[in-house]
Image 1 (cartoon, rainbow, N blue to C red):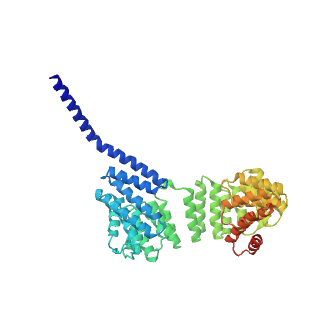
Image 2 (cartoon, rainbow, N blue to C red):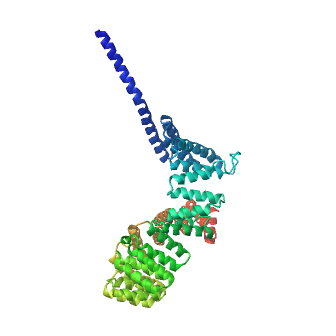
Image 3 (spheres, rainbow, N blue to C red):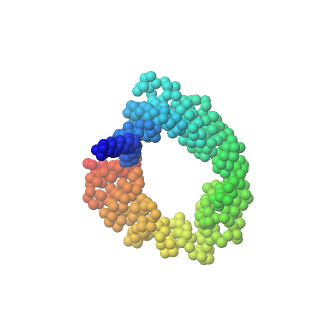
Length: 508
């Protein structure tokens, strides 16, 4: 009896173990599928595409009913096809991509991405010339219906709508205009992308306009919709409508209005030559500005671009007494005078401004005037004062180095160029070139070559940098390197006779 009891417990234990194993078996497969999936993703990001596909297939074999893995395989094959150099290599990969997307769609017919994947692959196959698929015809892949299905499942997807619009244009389908209108209605910002497309025309433009107006009527993102319509009319130089819609945009979520919004509105009034309303909006912008100096410069550049210097002077008179920005306005007005080559007026204003409160900016512009008038000693004096007041301003050091080089004060010129390089937020090839020229003049040919090499790394298509490096190599006796640099210089400036002559001398 006792033996029977032990036997039964043994059988019961085995039964429980079998049940547990049967229950854990699917879990094991899903766990392995997950591991293979992650490995595949990592291999793909690292550029090991074949390994990525191999591991994704292993994931698929472990979880054959998981549509997401099949969808990922479809994506992998499509991306791999895009990396191929010719259609013959890409075609079988696109076929594979489409097959896996179709399998994913069979398992999850309501997934928009799989429908889009089928449409995208189908479009790519239709775009082939037929030599790899003799049985193909333009309706064989049912591509348009798959685009429509993807949009039905995700109607707000801009990606899907863009793709379908391009598909309709490719096939010359007369449904293009309606598709464009719907895209603009659903996503008004699409205007900025659509207007850059090859199919952009007057009729497409009208369809976009209808879509944007419909978006406003349906109250779709009203602030953005009105702004896009404002840009639409601005592009057509319809200033009245552009102003109307921009003003409408400011009424929605008005708590988000910033100085830049009123600068933008002022710009539209400037385009219309309505200077009174432009001033009203510019002053409003300055009232709420977080950085008045920067916004003043933006406003000045608007007037400068249109060459409305007298109108800027009028704004200057309006703002001088309203804001504690008199000095900044003085400098901007001086810049306006310099743009008109009124050097003496600009100089007098800057000297007067510095009499009230000396600033590095005013000294910099005084140095610029001195440079324009070839008054090198004054230029040196003014820019030196600017560098003392703002020692970390790289532009000031560049100018100081330039005038010192002209005055043959080469040691100090090199030092100032070095400071410019030190304080530059982003390395500039021109500053390295400037120091290279100074070093070359000082007969520091190794240093000059080093700087020109850096300039070339930063800007690889400037012939004069290669020519400078070549001359430094010649001084150092590096004949072969000099020939190589001159060969590059000729590549980027083939009409330069001096470069050609020097190169011929070196390869004799």
